Length: 267
Image (cartoon, rainbow, N blue to C red; front, side, top):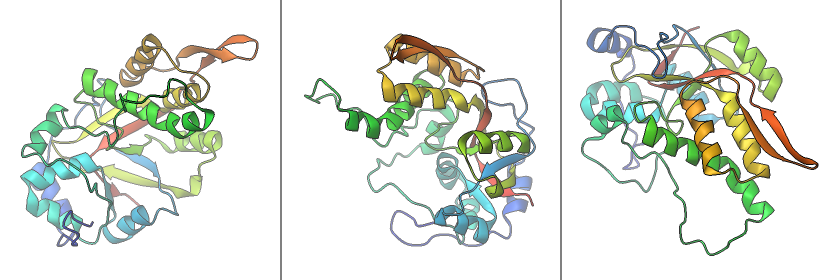
């Protein structure tokens, strides 16, 4: 990882397993938005063309969520530095440093959004081009605002690792979204009291992204979508414009996990 001062930081990963099991061992934790236990194993699509993830897996055998990692660097610098050995990551050049990051991470008051809405925009209409290049971020922006205001202790999509609870779901996702099934790797979540995991229906995100490309959803519909998402709802339906009037579209269901923590390769 490259630190904010531009220098490489870290020491050795050799003792990471001993450190985290002995020093930070916790009882099995429940998923944030349900009474289910956190899965023992996670499956993750790792892009063969993402040089950062490829490098980190080869050098450390682990991947980590950014919010979790920044939190432990505040409270356990030795552990953090040992983990960083050999890993690389991007960092935000424009961020506001806070003294109590870990406390705010746990309480859910960290500001994860890289961009906020321009309330001074003078254009009253949205061009097709503007809509196409901003629609995905609008989805994530509204999703994060909902989490921040109504589900603050849940893991943020802006920080989490994305994982699945079984290989069969990976096969379904591969067929549905044309993701490379050969890139799936098996991981274990290392125990830590700061871990956060939410089980969510990824197809609600897919539905909302599609809706954003053809319509401007009203506040009530937006609220229903994001309450459903963060509460771990299954299939939802929304009404959208169509050539011959309006149509009802279903999200369907594919369960994924948002994970704040360190995931170690288990192969």
